[in-house]
Image 1: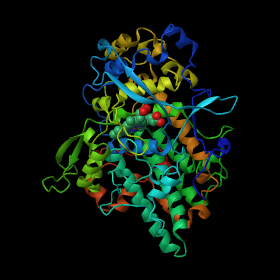
Image 2: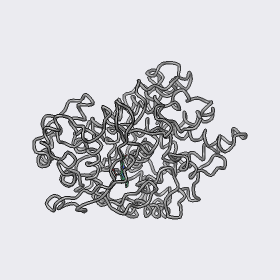
Image 3: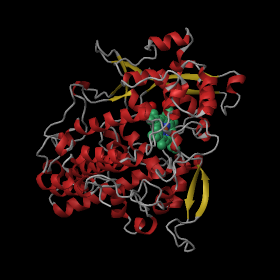
Image 4: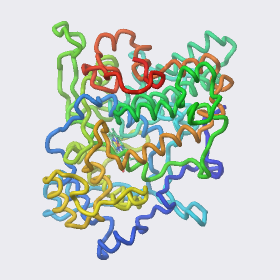
Length: 557
Ligand code: HEM
């Protein structure tokens, strides 16, 4: 029943590919249109990533997401990325530098980083790909670890439980690095979500032990792991995604993915007795991969480049204050985000404590995914290696992200849309009505829309009402959201009481949202501090009004 699942053809090494559309991912493979428009210039540096970062990405003034999406939601997606994907790096370093007239506004005039490692697949169809160092499945590896050593590090080997410290936060090693499944580029909000789901895992272990006193440590651990991973997947599917794309159609679509068109009540009563449309993807009799073994694509990674969600300052609230009658506790301190990252962030988190941190994150809006909203502090960032140690060379993340998509052969915006059978743009005005944006795009790319970088296009695109992300990114989200469930035996053939236990299945079936998880561990918190419906909206906002969906498809309020 172990969760170390591999793609069937991956071989003994358990390799996890990340490949681009069409298989090949080297930067050399590009569309003839782009080739022509670049006129033989160096693809990787045209236009210079630092110019793109300074003129189009860097934050001028923080733009928030209104009340739609809070800092728990922003951290949640980092929590998920760290469950699914991280590229293997080469040992060779690259340096990006620019002449004064280009680098003028950049905090770093040059920066060093490791190339993405390209490996030969041995296949004639897909010759090279990049390796994913994390397991791509929805298996909770962000808390459980990605390999044998990582998995051992987090376990207590008693009653199936994972390590957690007395203050309900993660334990740390002698260097101050958290003991958890994934510790790279972490910040206090991300670490808090890891701790919350370690608590969830341990609570499942307690419940299982009461019901099955004969289960040993290994059995408790394994059952609790599949249950907790399914809770994470469910929260992401029917709570987080519907807050990100807040429309009735999406609420219905995501609930149908989990429960099917006949709804939860029908499925609870009769089980998965109809096909995927009527009974949902979860509980299908066998996994489906539509003839293509499950793996994550480069395009998937690129659309999740959403560092603009991160603010400049973390707003710490005073939850002990009695001066406030309403649901929004007063502000205690505004802490620069860079002090909430890495080891320093961990120290601050232990002083703040899990409850104050969670309530504060709940009340702070995340940033909007739009141009001129990329955190300036990330343009001089001390990144971490896979062991969580600080890297010696700071990086300009905004410029690096532009470089990464180009290096990994991800098509530029128009090519990307063509690959998804979406209509490409022919002029800047097709992208947006905002004259200032059009002018800035023209300044960087001239009139050549084929050069537009994907990341810039996704941030510039006018959003559908209710969507916190672009329609282009949404297409990739939608495809992969279903695939992650239907290709996985733990959500299909093995979504049963033998694998999960009766009580474990009930635990998953009765948990709908992140609020349910928070209520389980902090029974008074949301009652005291939250007025909205989802723990991912800003907590003092209004509950979601009743929607036009049929009753059986509506989420419980
Ligand atoms: C304080 C919080 C965060 C820090 C310090 C951070 C830092 C980093 C760093 C250093 C990288 C690697 C850059 C490279 O070498 O290519 C990275 C990659 C990435 N980050 Fe973040 N990040 C944070 C939050 C987020 C959030 C909120 C998201 C939202 C989705 C996100 C999405 C990604 C993605 C998609 C990648 C690419 C992963 C890959 O190449 O495999 N990160 N981040």
